[in-house]
Image 1 (cartoon, rainbow, N blue to C red):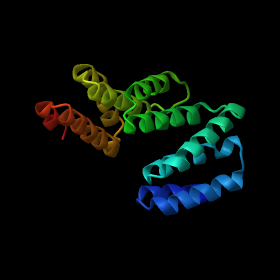
Image 2 (image 1 turned 90 degrees about the vertical axis):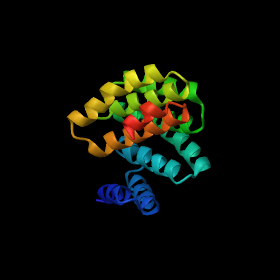
Image 3 (image 1 turned 180 degrees about the horizontal axis):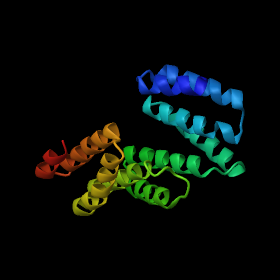
Image 4 (image 1 turned 45 degrees about the horizontal axis):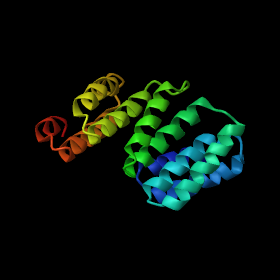
Length: 177
């Protein structure tokens, strides 16, 4: 119940309350395989709240738990989160390597893979490899549209537009905005 409440709060944008519910639910499960998804979600919320030191600590904790209790889906989600953190920190080579690693990991839901491709596309665009980035993004955007993930598709298009504009590619940016 707490896990669903945390998800609802996160989706409504009440990240502090979502974090509190996520942490409570994870504590109830203890350091088990069942708590991995909650812990990855909590780490993501910490990052979005700008709580960098806690995010880094949580990443280390989740990685330790994954070593003891391997879980392909949580490994994928954690790798994507680490790539996002590296991207935001302008560590583009790390972000690209992690996004590529995520794309090779088994166990991710098919609808989650396009997000990894978009992240890789953003890294390529910011690394001044715009044509390669757009080539990588196109099938990912098509996949979002195909499975009716409208919010994810819109977010991806806006992120691509922003990256293209920052790279001085105003014409292509306007096509995605």
